[in-house]
Image: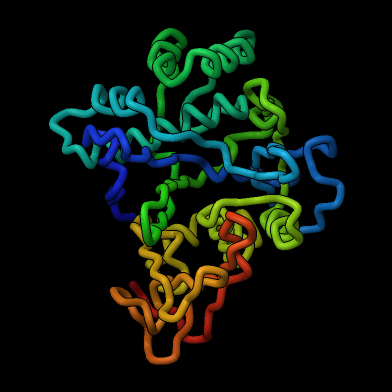
Length: 315
């Protein structure tokens, strides 16, 4: 696996007040057998043998879903910097993104990953303290309770470089460590919402019906999980495979999205590496690898992924 190649994440240290900090989150997977009936969607008939953790919230008439995560905070960078010796800025940002992902996952879900867990008698209180006090309290939380982060337990996925001034999402992938950790799952904070476990194909079904909203990057993660990982035991092989233009998600590198020529405001095709028309990483003539999107109200929604046969050339 190549090291994280942070690009626009460095804006947080640039001093630009208009720079949008990158978002860091975790695609947290759990075998179905570890979930009680109360934790699962009764209408979920997805073929995958695992579920993914989502935070569902309601705003007005719409329902959105998100992987647990949060924007990168200055405190995450400070913690990363304090634990690296003679590091470059890129190394600090890469570690800070992992810190932000682990921190926010515990805050939002009550589950600790890529670290030893806090003591059972204090877990719920500690979760609410971190929600209330914010990222700056995370360093004291680690020190006071002897919690040691293991950042390499997170597998970093590719991230999109969108055309225009779009935000950047960094998504990491890991499994819940054991069934006992799942039992601690609880939504942090007082906002209107819920913590749910669903198969990737079930989430995509709800999205296609307009029953929930996802970001473009998170839709792509769920689509690729559904397409490439029907069985959880195959995850190590998937992550160890050589990078492919047909599946750039599984290799930690920026994926540049480009608008297809002739696209209008209402309907837009976004080119992925391997598409014959991609300007910097094209495939062979006639090859298609693109996200088909449309503008619904003010939101850009995905209609599907067009992937032609023969798009499996290496990056």
